[in-house]
Image (tube, rainbow, N blue to C red; front, side):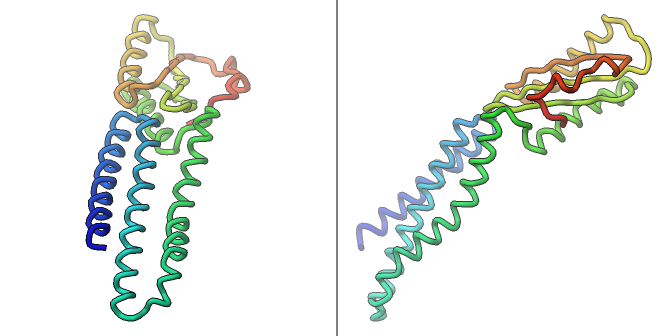
Length: 199
């Protein structure tokens, strides 16, 4: 007990520190690999915490002549561990499965893409914009339709397209975007976009 408890405490601190660092970096570079690795370290952190709690409870039980409770310590902590982890892992499983299948990105990403599109709608007095997106791993596929009120020169539209692409790449380094300007939405075939979801 004198050796095991300090070791468990050190393990808990190290695992928690690595988890925090990996999670921060995963969010910064938007890497699913780092995100998955951070979740593995989160599991290690919780296991270390459960181990330390088991030893502390066993020590307290032995000091107060509650040895009959010791047989229940591991099952109760294991059950608590599972109750804490199942929702987290279940949510990740659903999200990763969607990304693997190229489904629509999270609503926060879709909202961000809409904000980027409509910033340029307002800036250049366009009629409206429609944004379709899918996410596979860390790659974000974007198709943006921008509807014009009047004809504009190709040179001007190319310049605006470059501005929009820069804004999208500033939001995500891992995006592939097509930006289409049109005066007439009748030619747009939405059935040809089965793998993209409207943002």
